Structure formats: C-alpha cells, structure tokens
Image 1 (cartoon, rainbow, N blue to C red):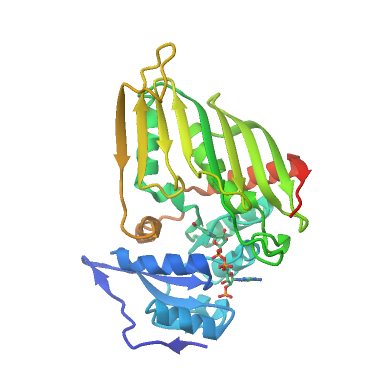
Image 2 (cartoon, rainbow, N blue to C red):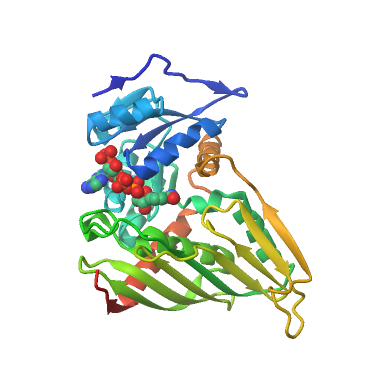
Length: 352
Ligand SMILES: NC(=O)c1ccc[n+]([C@@H]2O[C@H](COP(=O)([O-])OP(=O)(O)OC[C@H]3O[C@@H](n4cnc5c(N)ncnc54)[C@H](OP(=O)(O)O)[C@@H]3O)[C@@H](O)[C@H]2O)c1
C-alpha cells in the first residue's frame, strides 16, 4: 500500500532537464548508502522505496525524505512515474526481482553479483533486450573517475605493457550462519561478495582471463570464506587476486608495468586516488626507488555512489539500453567466469 510521507512529490527540473526518478527495492545497508547519495547528484531524485515490510519502507522513506513508501516490491514496480529501479537486495533475490522488474517494464540497476548462475544472467539480458529496457550490474567501481584515468594509462602503454597485477579484498564480516554472507541460500561467500571486485577490476585493466587456478576455504555452512585466484589474461599478463569475508587484508590494487607501477590504495574498489611510481624499467629499477611519482587524484565528497547514480541517470536520459562502462557482455562473462572458478577451485576445509 502506498504511504505518502510528505506532500512535496517533486517532478523537479534541474538545469532545464527533468530529473530521473528512481525507485529503491530493499532497505538494507547498501540501499541506505545508495539513498543517502541523492543529495550529491544533480540529475536524479529518489521518488519511492519498497520493502517486504511496510514499516521498514516507511522508516527508510522518512530517513531519506522519499515521498512514497510501499510494503511490497510489486507495488512499486506498478508505479508509472518511476524511471528506473535500484535493486539492493540479498544476492539470491537479484534474479527473481530483476526479472519481475523487467516484466513490469522498468529499467534496472541491480547490485553485484548480478545473479548466482550464468544462465539466469543470460536470460535477464535477453529479457531486457526483448523489452527494450536499460539493464546494468551495479559494479560501481567502474564509475569512479580514478578508474577511468588508470585505464587510459594502461591502455596507452605510456609506461610499457602491464605484465602483472595484485589485488585483494578481505574483511571480517558478519559470520552469523544465517546472515547473507554465510548462508548459501542467500548467495553467501567471499567470491560473490567481494572477490568480484579484484576479478572484474583485473579483467578491466588486463583483458579476459584465459587460464586460472583457484583455491578456497569452505565454511561449515558451505560457502567460501577465503579465495585465491591466479590468472593469466589474454594480454599475457598474470594476476594474483584474493578475497575474504573472515580475514582483514589491505584491500589494495597494484598494476606493474614495464616502466612504472600504479598503486591504488584502499579502498581500491571506490578510489579517490591512485599513485604512479615511474622507475624507468632499467635493470634493477624498482617502484620503491622511483625517478618520478605522480598522483591521480579525483576526490569525492560523499560515499561515492554519486558517480553511479549520475552515470545511470545519464544513460536513461540518453535512451541507452546498457552502460558503456559496464556492458552486459561483461556482466555475462563475469557470471560465466565465477561459475567456472566455483566449479574448478581446490577446496580446503575451514573451521568456521
Ligand atoms: N556496491 C557496494 O559497495 C556493495 C556493498 C555491500 C553490499 N552490496 C550488495 O548489496 C546487496 C545487499 O547487501 P546489504 O549489505 O545491503 O544486505 P542487507 O543489509 O542484509 O540488506 C539486504 C536486503 O535484502 C532484502 N531481502 C530480500 N529478500 C531477503 C531475504 N530472503 N532475506 C534477507 N533479506 C532479504 C531486505 O530488504 P527488505 O526486507 O527491506 O525488503 C534486506 O534489507 C548484496 O547484493 C551485496 O552484494 C554492494
């Protein structure tokens, strides 16, 4: 049921264009962070929120000054004045709710990992194309200006070829066996939750993965708590990637080129800065004793979701059906790669 929080249901204009009206499905941690960024954007407004529980939707709406709150996802999806929905639900809900949204005629930005099976990803992409609707996996890393600048440097080969990369994302999460990280029914596990960042970031800079070896520790609940991937990319570069939900690691990325090293410090998946150490590439040269250092700095004031919200709003305004920064072909390849890693990793037991 619709619940009007206030009377200022604005169809507001910004700089002569109509703001894109967003609906949010889910009221969890990331939905809260996403919602709080609308105050930093010029091209978008938050028009409605839906939860499985009306009281939760009301309280979320009140906290973020959202005009409408609904007690089911279906109700929000029926509203004609919503231009796009953001799906910030547990991983296992991504496929059914994205499908439901597309069938209701709504463009979708769905959190990572897009689905839990490559087949489901393929089906959703086909459905979006049939319905001529925008669809994007919410891998927000791709929308940060530092990532664009690093990609330009790597692609230009200004400092030679990139031959090696190291990236990690390990944190100590909520290890409640029923929680979203540890429960296989909710799509838990380190690879789905955070391993996707080093995996897709390495792929973004170094190209497709052609060979890999992986090892994972498995919890009693049956999810991976730690994973290590060693990969070869189409460019010939190698990468060493790791992720964890029970171990705090540095959460950094390094790209080693012939004549320089780029270090993206924590938080590499939402970077305000990257550091380039140019060492020249002579015998014995090292990023620890560079001849020159450069800083790539693109600070942001909020939590960083502003870039994704602005980018997607611009895609919708331009009539695009997919994002040039995070294509559907890449989302499908990521889902296929995750499936391949999960079925080929060497499993070692974990005590948790
Ligand atoms: N981009 C990022 O930086 C980032 C960071 C963290 C997480 N994420 C992604 O965001 C998603 C949500 O993570 P979160 O940390 O926000 O999780 P969370 O706090 O547990 O919230 C998940 C939401 O999912 C909804 N839900 C639907 N079916 C559910 C079920 N069967 N059991 C439990 N909840 C269910 C609930 O919404 P209602 O009850 O309100 O309907 C709940 O609020 C995940 O896909 C995760 O990968 C992204």
